[in-house]
Length: 311
Image 1 (cartoon, rainbow, N blue to C red):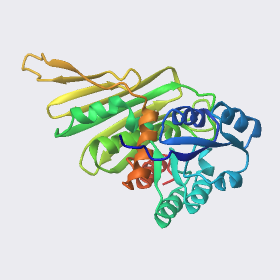
Image 2 (image 1 turned 45 degrees about the horizontal axis):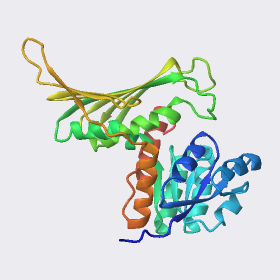
Image 3 (image 1 turned 90 degrees about the vertical axis):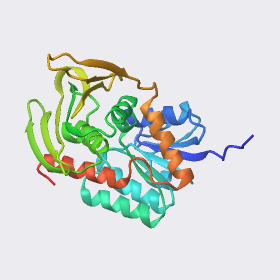
């Protein structure tokens, strides 16, 4: 019987919706021992920490000096860089929520700090671990992709802080497009609208990738119900995935009379966040590059900022 290595001492920074999700999932993974939860609101920090037998802290300095092996940074975007760099310089491995940072300069500081200290910097692009996305990637393997269309819409989320739909939602889909094509986005044609908020709440984004694939993202906070769909057209098939139900269907073998065949593609039940955290632990244990690198996070952010006219 092989003995399992000692669990990694883990801290979660930011006890909002995502931070609480991370704490819940990490506490069930034997690679991690959740020891600290940071939130600027001490009551919140202690409340979430108590549920997992961890210590609540309300200062970044206390968190950085807590003797952690690794940390999840799920604080507001503008704080990602300073906290992550401080942790990396202390020798702590970091999984940072998407987007990697608020600016390209900040993202580069984080990537440099990880490299200089030989530590893992992984970006929490959780849709990459969605079984439906993995099923689509398998279905189109070896196929000549023509186009990708993604719809990610729903009502305005009450939790939203300071960003609009491009940073909050489209960053997921920019990553999916790069992941499925293995190519980088060369051209962006964004159309943005501010219908109710002080920031864009509707976006239609068109892309051309370096390998010639074209892609389109529809995203908004004005649809009364949630939709998350991914469609990929290739020379031989058309693949449709619902990222919420995780149902994936392949249409193929179109005949001159217009008839075609369909088949369901298996997507294995799994919680994407759990797979993401297991991948983080794997990167720490093996020294392999994480599945979503700091460079991936930087590329996704650069494209999003170009869509906002800030890149």
